[in-house]
Length: 184
View 1 (cartoon, helix red, strand yellow):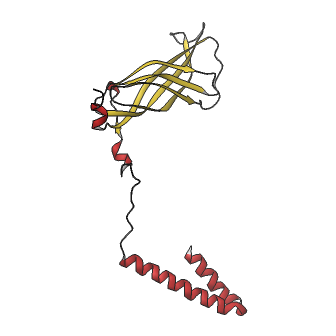
View 2 (tube, one colour; view 1 turned 30 degrees about the vertical axis):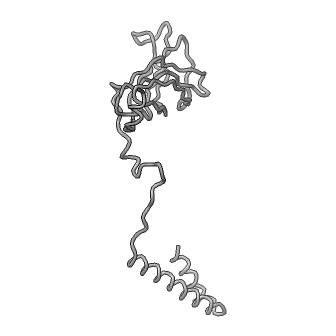
View 3 (cartoon, rainbow, N blue to C red; view 1 turned 135 degrees about the vertical axis):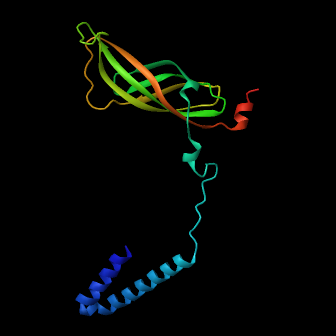
């Protein structure tokens, strides 16, 4: 940014003789400012960044992968007609040390009709992975609902639809000790 301003002042000083004093004075002031900034940068130390109160200083370090063996899901279902769809259900956090923060569900919608080429009698209409923000403390179960849109055009079903919903990933944060022991 400063080099662009310096080039403008230099062009004014060289091209327009009547504005030469303004160009020279502007260039001198700009060079003094740049010199002062470089000297202050070399002699001083970098300003410390103070994290916001109540937040961890490095949030990426606090998030951990949540073991899927300690996460149960119940009554997972898709609602809506696609404008948008809604993923609903109940999650149960069976962990004693981690608070569930979010999870990713893989949703596969199948069209089951007579004459389908697949031996199961169903063909895949669409599939998607959906991230769901659902917080649950250790030992807690929680209902959730998360809206989502499918990508691209969704073909119309010829028969009955069947949804397969699987939780494929989850993340959590360490639970606070008082949150675990406050239950009793």
